[in-house]
Amino acid sequence: MKISVVIPTKNEEATLEPILTGCLKHADEVLLIDGHSTDRTREIAAQYGVPIHLDRGKGKGDAMKLAISLFTGDILVYIDADGSHDPDDIPRLVQPIRDNTADMVIGSRFKGGSDELVGTINQLFRITGSNIITTFINYRWNVHLSDTQNGFRALRREAAEAINLQVDGFPIETEMDIQLLQRRFRIGEVAAHEYARKGGESKIRLVKIWYQYPLLLLKTWFQPRFID
Ligand SMILES: Nc1nc2c(ncn2[C@@H]2O[C@H](COP(=O)(O)OP(=O)(O)O)[C@@H](O)[C@H]2O)c(=O)[nH]1
Ligand SMILES: [Mg+2]
Picture (spheres, rainbow, N blue to C red):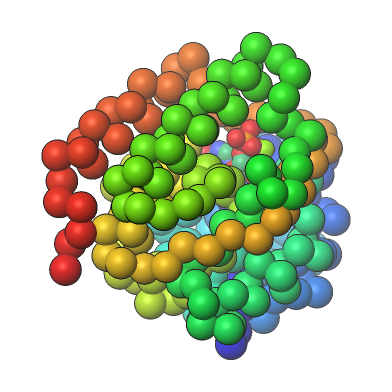
């Protein structure tokens, strides 16, 4: 099965290079979906001959949706550009899809550990929110996931093409999980360690967007559990 790796980027010149070289080792295709970076991000990708597509300026979710219409492989892998995820984990991440035991595989930080989830008030807010969302999803679809939020994930082409994502921002992973479960796709997990961002700045502003998560869950509550 051919592997396409998509890297969403927004001003990640400090950390992008080792991610690119790592991904090129494990992929048949690497695509950059850039959020109109104003630093050297696109220049660095061009040096490695990696195709660059601009997102529509609406956010990370917008970039992830665009990727679905662009990738050419059998498996789509999303990986961040900030050094939080290890490209050498890609073979383990895609293995359950190859083995036909899952349609999407999430790299679980709760199984692999995280340097970014514990210690500050912001992190407490994130880990608590993340666990509430995961509990909601597990309850509604009778699954037992540990991490529904990590952006490091792999999807089988059929699964990526079957869903119709609407979210433009960071809640995109939550929406992706829900839409796949509604369509009876199998979500698997492998342990994946999350490293602290290795440079640059996080783009997430939880104070501004936190309400989008409960709204998404509320909307889902009134939708059918399964869409056949
Ligand atoms: N194309 C695109 N990528 C984005 C955007 N916002 C964030 N990203 C990328 O998405 C990944 C995760 O973002 P990050 O800021 O690290 O979020 P965090 O890990 O939740 O703190 C990184 O590779 C970012 O460069 C955006 O608006 N457009
Ligand atoms: Mg990050």
